[in-house]
Amino acid sequence: MQAFTQVTGLTLPLDRANVDTDAIIPKQYLKSIKRSGFGPFLFDDWRYLDAGDLDIDPATRRPNPEFVLNQPRYKGASVLLARENFGCGSSREHAVWALSDYGFRTVIAPSFADIFFNNSFKTGFLPIVLKDEEIDALFVEAQAEGYRLTVDLPEQTVRTPGGKSFRFDIDPFRKDCLVRGLDEIGLTLQRSEAIRAYEARRKQEAPWLFA
Image 1 (cartoon, helix red, strand yellow):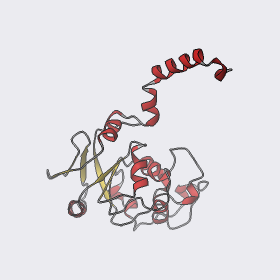
Image 2 (cartoon, one colour):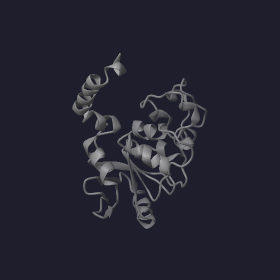
Image 3 (cartoon, helix red, strand yellow):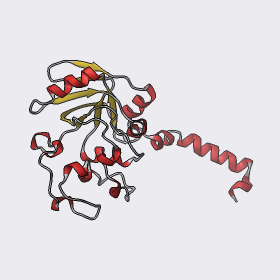
Image 4 (tube, helix red, strand yellow):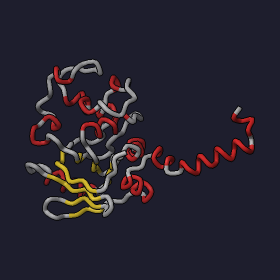
């Protein structure tokens, strides 16, 4: 998993509340269990004017010029600014995978759906909760061309180009995992010597289990 320490990135304002997981990555793309390849289908129904599927090349489709993700000024954005209850709807890890595969490293919103919020940390993706008034202020500032926010995870702050700083809370264990780039598998592998020692001891104590 990619470590997360500090990210300074172009900020894309998605001014919609209750963005659900089917809007983030529609159901027809859930056929794949790989974590990559979902970026071209992020916000698919809003992003394109015609229907798509995994076997349709996105380059052949008609982009919606009105949708914020398609506007040239936001190309390469890595910080997503959103409204309340982001990631609601059905449970699907693919929603986080699509955001990450597109290039987003973090999403900042006043609230998140619990399942999306928990899934994010397993992929090295940082969901940040700020106050409503702080989000409102960021949406106003984000209208400026080339607006870039700095997210500092060790300091737990979001800094604006003008020098304003907003502090966010995060569970210490989750913070440590993100900073060190450790998912559940990575954490387990850190104990690989102890696991091997346990297995060797069990083979001696109960050899019939390994016949």
